Image (cartoon, rainbow, N blue to C red; front, side, top):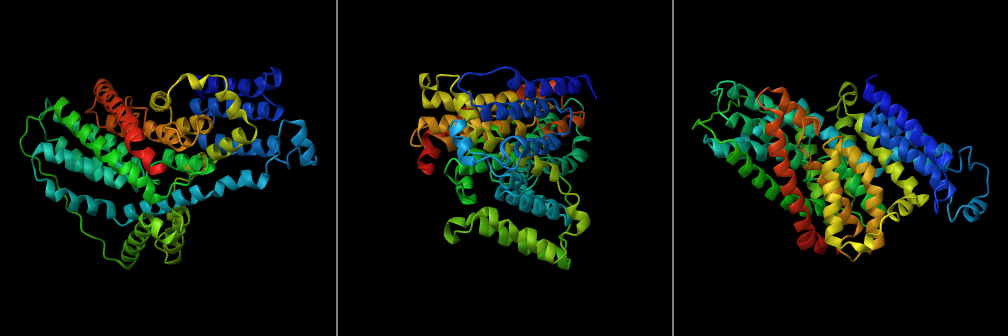
Length: 472
């Protein structure tokens, strides 16, 4: 265990014990219990003395033990008595807490993971890249735009990390033949992770923070459909992608005048591959037409989960490779949000600041900036998980009709964290770019900071002028 992990273990345990030792004014006893879980999770998620998915499971276990009617604290007590003794708190259902592991949002993401892994299995991603890169020609400027477009499109449906790893194999052979002093190699290497992070915002399944936004907004009373998400996020993604493309090209101009990428893959025509193509197309069609047929995108995700299994397109060995730890992390975040809302811990924490002194636009900007800032130093999923309950509570206090409503604040955090690209540790795609040896930390910091600041401006602009009307 590293020194940082040991520090995280000490701080996590100390944070858990703190609410038992110190009485906070206006915070109920159940709120103190929830604060213990929150502080433990925060330090454990940030410093990782244990794996972050294990922390999520610990969060669920502690919730069952300390806050549910089946646990040793409130188990066997009359719920009405607890309701009267503890300021309106009613012990939650242990089944509901454990049920976060199969929350509809988890099912949505599981369906996305299965489609993404099947795409890699049958080289669907590489073939899509080959087809989509053809119209961009051979000039460096347009090749850069093409690579970013394809990467963004793939990462809307696949893991950002997997997309980046795959796309790097496309450009590495060419980069090795470029002159050593050609700065355009830096632009190419950075374009892939930046486009993957931005493209992951386009759909609810594109990035784990998106799922956290959808789940939090649904709890606040506004269910975001797959199509509604895309109607809000896709224009933002396009503008952000174009701005990032222009920025990278201006900062790292090429000396070469012609780039030819090798794309020698062919379409897989096996029976299972064809079945996958059909399931992928049908699922995508059902997702984007949710407003027509009325079936939630969460339950549409059962289509690929079921049929890719029924027809053995995804075999048991494939299922074992899925990133289950990401699903557990999101489930733990959902559970923590439930605890904070049920015990009114989030109300108490929000009440520590006089939010009425700030305008709605300022509040939006504050949360976008905070999400961007802290997710440069930790997992964007963890950052979104920790901030989301507070944002929802503030949004509800501001009123659903205002600019700083719950859904918009949730979007500020979820999408703001995806603009965090300053450091190699900010996201796995950034780390992959650094591993090429082409990019220096200073290159990434300058470019990532510029993209992040542009992202905050775009988030506030879209929230005020576009998204507020769509939500209402």
